[in-house]
Image (cartoon, rainbow, N blue to C red; front, side, top):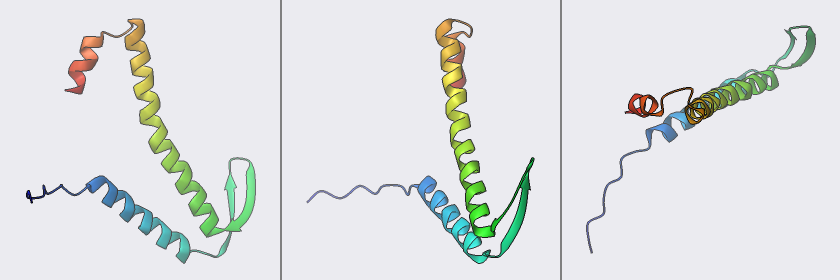
Length: 92
């Protein structure tokens, strides 16, 4: 039987898993009722719900921003506004 190759650990998965576990612990430890004012809206909800909502919003922004910027950069390169070779050199 051939020797099995050792795969390096997937650090991104471990970090995301650790952060998710930490976020779950923080949310579960904060169950008291709080009043929150965001811009012109004011509402009362358990802190666990507010933490989870704002955590989800932050994760969505953190995921969407690089994707949108990459798409916008590719569109500008395609239209000729940016030299495509310069973009490729920047990635290396």
